Length: 290
Image (cartoon, rainbow, N blue to C red; front, side):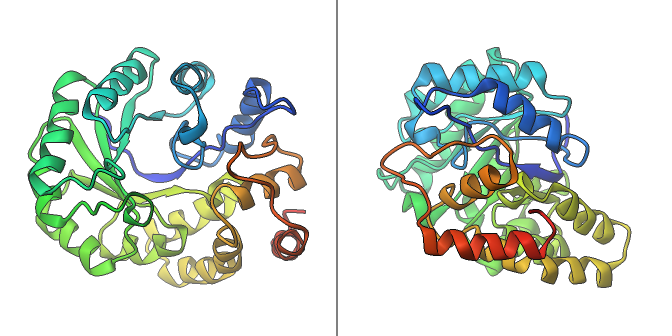
């Protein structure tokens, strides 16, 4: 079973002016990324899965699986276990190499419910499953205890960890087997998580700076921690400005400014305002991206 590691962009879903999915733009974005990245994630949070219809969601994953030259981890989560099973099966049929499932949001399941949710989905598909822990958005935290139990299920192969809690992240790595992959879900914490034993990052910043992100990761893997640290600090202003507003509002604006395909976010998200756009432009210019 493939190990997913390295620099993995959480793809934006580009929209046309009428807010239909821009598939040609998606292909252009992949062309920009694929020289540097190790896999891609379509239809996740950054891909505005919350405002994609099921038909759009599945078609985006299918399209990326057809044209991508790197492995594809399809977003497939829901706060309903029945719906998560449906999406995971559809993502598998669409050709994804793995499925990523966010923890059930709003419901606030207890640890046993969370375990049973993932166990149920994993039993219904044959592709690898990656859990996604982002309690700031879901009000649900996947604890080290639950992660340890999930790591014992054959096709649950890893977790995207965006809790921001390095103690929790270290405890998950300590409790789980070496081949259970922990991926950073926060660009700023990528280097610290690599130092703790993480295997890579599912990244917002890699949509616009894939080369720099890959250089940082490669430097670390080659044992050049000083170079990796220098690149981390070089990228820090970008990590910050990409969350100057709700993700993916800033990264979509950045991609539009760079001539990549993004379009506007779907409502209830709206475009980045002028003052924040100026701050974004300053950072992009400083990194030679504009």
